[in-house]
Figure 1 (tube, rainbow, N blue to C red):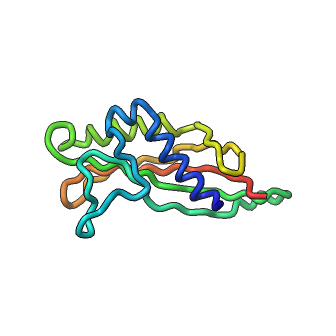
Figure 2 (cartoon, one colour):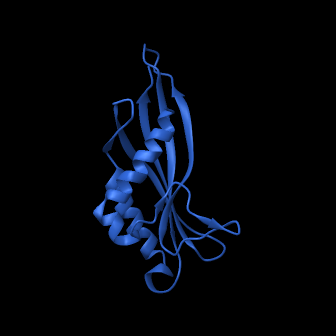
Figure 3 (cartoon, rainbow, N blue to C red):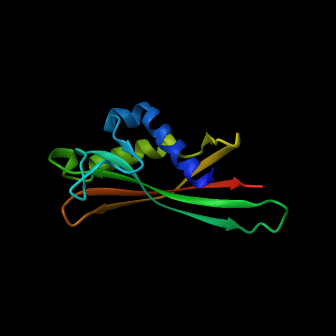
Length: 142
């Protein structure tokens, strides 16, 4: 199995199983949210996966290591805390705590540490609050 796809599946499972994340979004954690008429068909708030990149880590020794960088997106809109960036910020904080420095077990049997690298808080043109979170994992594919 492609290690990037394996990690992404595991990350979704970790977020769904995390009590703090679930308290904020319920079961609305998706690789790709359901769509209707070309638009996401999910009530606010929810979490989805964004793009991912796989690059070769040139360590110079005998290991074949890839760096997998992936994005987790938090989406929030509505009134109250959802109108400000507070709701998206609370969810992003819970996601960071659920994933940062945590190990996920891959199909290969390897354990891979996930590291948080950055969270960007954005306001989309339609008013949606959007936290774009970047994480990284190094995988030995030898």
